[in-house]
Amino acid sequence: MEPNRVFWGMLSRRQCLVPTRRGWLLLALGVGVLVFAVLRGAYPFLALNAPAPGGILVVEGWVPDYALAAAGAEFRRHHYAKLLVTGIPLEQGAPLSEYKNYAHLGAATLIQLGLSTNDIQAVPAPLTRRDRTYATALSLKAWLREQQVPPTKVNLVTTGPHARRSRLLFEKALGRDFTVGVLSVPGRDFDAQHWWRSSQGVRVVTGEMIAYCYVRFFFRPNE
Image 1 (cartoon, rainbow, N blue to C red):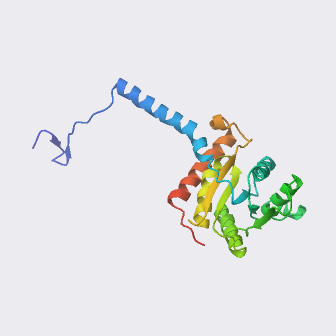
Image 2 (image 1 turned 120 degrees about the horizontal axis):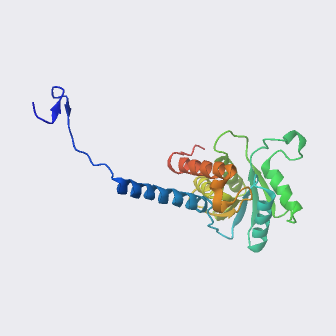
Image 3 (image 1 turned 45 degrees about the horizontal axis):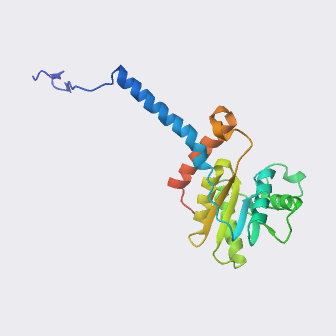
């Protein structure tokens, strides 16, 4: 029997390399640098700002009032044809509210913030339990077709780390004929620079990162 074989030839000895103390230290340092880079870079990556001024301004109706105010300021700052508000039905408080959909609620809020009713249009989406952002983008696409709006630039306003995923889903829904830009209004729920220090920040940023990876690599549009 060969000297490197044991147990009647069923097992053999092989040499392998294992890290030394210095090697383990360098490996730990490399992992630490990688973790730090992810922590520092995740939020800026997700909270994409890539505006496309002009054309049509779109704001997601579920965003907080300060983000709607930012959308109103953006509308006044540039020459947009219309400000469209998307949204699904309210998930809480609908029986007590005059408005049953985030689109109508957001549009009414913008009017109270000083915008003209001629400039704002609510574009509600039906109730859906999955891919809600994509569903609102499809409703927007249907409205643009009904109004015979030619292909143009669409500038999307949303909040924080939702921005990159929202733009990707709107691009998938609207198609290549439309140029989709995005404005990310900084959120106020947690410190964006140190999001990992709060449970809200960890939940939002890690959730958006997972959701973005799903949309980028696994999501298949089904209109």
